[in-house]
Image (cartoon, rainbow, N blue to C red; front, side, top):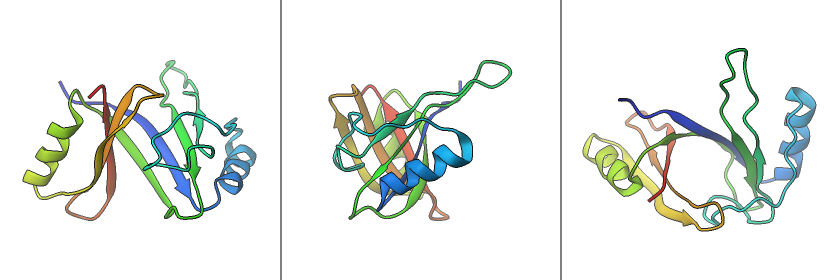
Amino acid sequence: MADPVVHFEIIGPDPAALRSFYSGLFGWDAPPGASVAPEISDTDQYSFIDAIPTGDSSGIPGGIGGGAQSAARATFYVGVPDVERALAEAERLGGTRILGPVRNEGGGVTVGHFRDPAGNLIGVAGPR
């Protein structure tokens, strides 16, 4: 069975401006203060966006965050059972580990980032 996309996030140096932009553009409600690992975003600047259902009731939750030291990026996360194993496999296949595994105790999730061979930043998330 293939691993699904489970989360997306938009990160930048001015998270308040990003929240305002995406609220105006798409109607996303994203109040700051969600639990997040500090390696991902300033902890008081991260916002979760609930999954917005499509016609078939599917939808992917997301987040907006960052802070003054954050590089702008949009990333999607693939759900995996073991983040370390997925990062090691990405490296074995020619990717480059960028972050992790990092545990967000408040959210009960472990995340990691890697760049694929073309340089795209991809996230993996799982229980460990």
